[in-house]
Image (cartoon, rainbow, N blue to C red; front, top):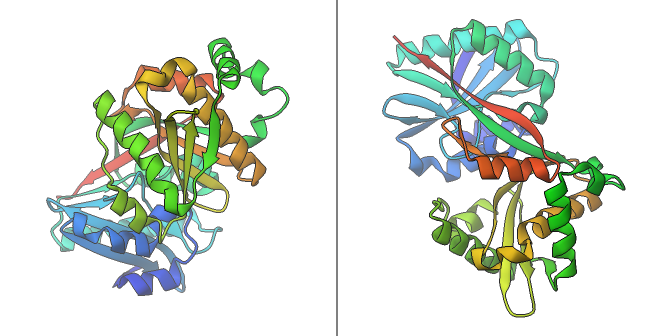
Length: 311
């Protein structure tokens, strides 16, 4: 298996329909200033088989380097295990030759591409990659928003949703001109709860030129009380990058109202999966977030981070 260092445009010409949009060459190029260098790598035998993009920090190859996950992309979905093995072996040799200290790979959750995920997991394990973190990730299947939804979710979630529906709340999908209103609610939520907000509004706007972004707002007659910012990562999957409410309005059960309406919106436009994101940091759970996501009907999956030291 041959490894080729290419430009972003050359990479895009081969990997033009990635599993998820964090692996778009344009997205990596947009964020290249966040690391020391970016490498666009293609793997080829008789044909191009795989691609991967790395950022470099402290002599470590990272995928992702500015996103929730990254990992390998296939050119053809019938990629064979031995072809993946060959690509990983070639990658490790290339990393040694270029004197990198290690390789860190965090692929997307398995539901993004179940068959490929299983193959990658097996191949990385056999190539000596260690599991460094196991994050708990949540997603919602919109087919589950049906006549039995209220009966299937947790009692407290059902009670809170019913309460929220009796309040004078309004769910709005914002126009691009009004998208700042959602960001302002998220920023206040993060500030009041002491959580970091890593993206500026300007960075979100730049990202939106590459990855489609939806902005949602929940309001009552006097205030904006909750918001969600959602990325379209494929034709079938969106990911909630930010959502939250203002703590002083939590008695209105705004998060139950917001999540239900987000689910309903994507069901209506026939998006089958909503990735709600992980609720662990370095594998340590935020129990409140985990229980909230499970209570509203989310399924539980894993984000496995793999690492190989290069000697």
